[in-house]
Amino acid sequence: MRSCDGALSEEAALRPDSAQRCVRGKMEAVRTCVGCRSRAPRSSLLRVVLRNSELVADPSATLPGRGAWLHPVDECLDLALQRRAFGRALKVQEALDPTAVRAALRPRTAPREQAEEAVTSHE
Ligand SMILES: [Zn+2]
Image 1 (cartoon, helix red, strand yellow):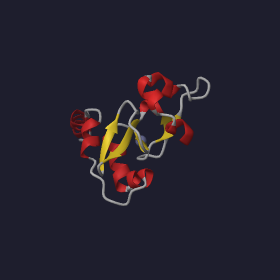
Image 2 (image 1 turned 60 degrees about the horizontal axis):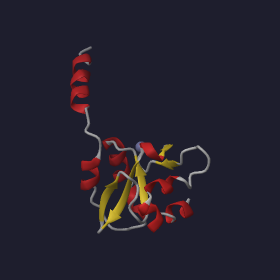
Image 3 (image 1 turned 60 degrees about the vertical axis):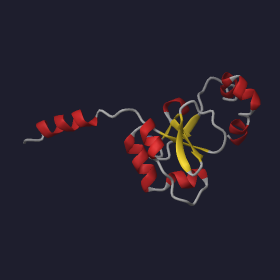
Image 4 (image 1 turned 45 degrees about the horizontal axis):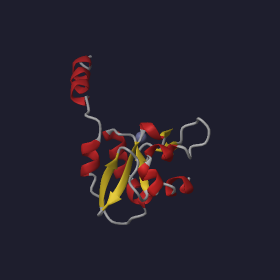
């Protein structure tokens, strides 16, 4: 796994496609979400890296350095923050600011869902 990530050097920067060639066979690489801890294809997870003590989203998974993988949803971000999973995954002790990551999450449709729940919970 490490050799795969470490191979993202100049060559990978020039040809982003080459980064995927280190995936063996046709199976897509699987990563563990730092929030819910379930495994998922890396294409369905958002890579998060550390930049100047701040968490930043890396949607193209091309930024150098250690990365943490997260389902791009508030629920998993909150879980990861509760467990300080980013610090563990990224090997840092300090508090991390998730603002930029939260901003990169998919827009949530929860307000409408919650409204529907409120309507159906009248029993
Ligand atoms: Zn998750």
